[in-house]
Amino acid sequence: MSDPEQLPSEPEPVPVWVAAARPVPPQRIWLNVLLLVATLVTTLWTGAEHWLSFDADFRQPTGPIDVVSTVLHGGWYALTIMAILGAHELGHYMACRYYGIRASLPYFLPVPLPLTGTAGAFIKIREPITSKQSLFDIGIAGPLAGFVVAVPALLIGLNLSRVATLPPDFQGLALGEPLLFKVVSYAIFGTLPDNVSVNMHPMAFAAWFGLLATALNLVPIGQFDGGHIAYATLGRHAHRVTIGALVGTIGLSFYSSSWIGWTVIAVGLLFAFGWRHPAVWDEDVPLDRTRQWLALVALVIFVLCFTPAPIEPMELLKGR
Image (tube, rainbow, N blue to C red; front, side):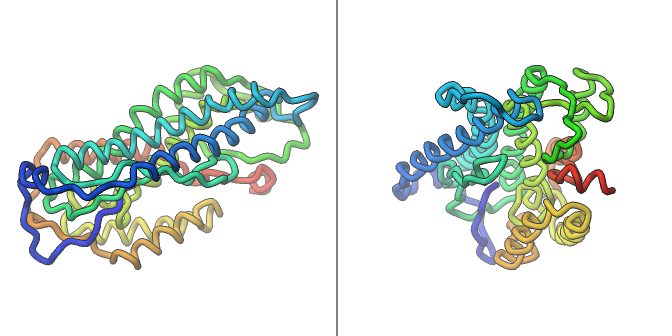
């Protein structure tokens, strides 16, 4: 996810060599490193919990726990999810560098949230993006890079996973399966009986979270990557897509409570930055054919990574 600032009313394109020649304000690299290390700690802790759950096959862990071994096994999750999130943000960063637009290095968010251990990552774009081409390339570079890392992680992680019988009194969480996850899982495990489920290896869970994060970023709203791609593709008509997407996410909140928090964030960003995307100087100039096809690729990736009910309690699903 990127966070570009508002544009002036009549922006002018800035040649790359001019932007590169301007003095660069000092960056607090120590803060990026500190957040990176802190996020590694929180995701290692979370990964250790995932490993204990995986090792127990849907039952309560028994016996003494080897803390050092468990934390090391948590690296399966921690390193995978940080690779996916890092690739996503570095995709944005390298695209900014290509166009001579100043941007920060990635800021990881070490939040000790259940299941994830992080709230993701972001970069700060420190000057306006003035053309549709650069806006499109910067917006799509992150999801493409993250997806490229998430796919092999999913393939490896599911091959490391195993099937296990659910205990009759199991009270855990059910994770919604994106279309790509369903296809790979079926190719590996086939059709499973009702009382059997895939016991996800921590690496597979990291890939699942990476796919979900990719889908959320591609929702065509405001300052999310999907909002940048939609505006670069549709110009001034993109706000209609934004409204439609927002109505859709509000509707999903009634279907699955796991959408409520994300919808609140999306609405907050729209009120903070406006319902219409900041303008670029060539708003009425169509994108070239290659980028139009890439926009379609982004839509396909969104469909492959999307799930309408990301996280649900098992007892709630049984009641439907």
